[in-house]
Image (tube, rainbow, N blue to C red; front, side, top):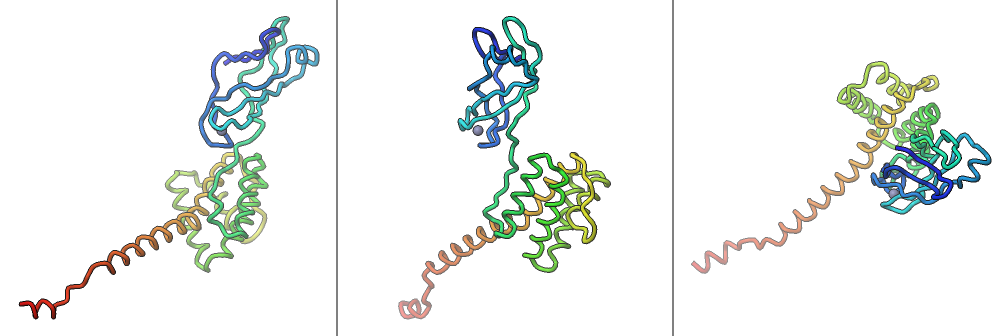
Length: 234
Ligand SMILES: [Zn+2]
């Protein structure tokens, strides 16, 4: 896909571009809003140009950066691999978390979104420890078992699996240095652990409470058969 800034017609995009939106989550088209003028690019000859789009689904602004490929007399060509300036934030149903865990998990996932993978790993351990302190004494064992099951189901190799387990649960030493690939496993693993422990549990409890409430309601509305009356009538 080619992108051009023309001398006369301004910004030109050969075909529509769709991407996942960090604001609304939709896989929506990016509609051009603003691009640097031909004159400014031709005069300053920057390595990169910033472009402003908007999300077709939610209308939020989307900022992208493109390398300037060539500067011609009539048009400037931009490299097609646009870099999203604003990173997609990881989503989580934070409302189900206790306050002490909520803020920590947000910052943990923000570290991942920023690509600060070792900061992310360090925060994963801190957040996991804080969460386990809010739960009962057997929670750590259950979380370790749940993690192993996830790693097995997702066929994660032993080295990455071991790194993730050490990051989350080791009692001593600093978390190991992690690769982007291991960080990708770790982010899904920690989201799954917190989901299972807080979100799923709270949703199940609420659903069961509701069903039992209605079960009790309908039972109390059934009029019991009074056998003595029937005998009298007979
Ligand atoms: Zn959007």
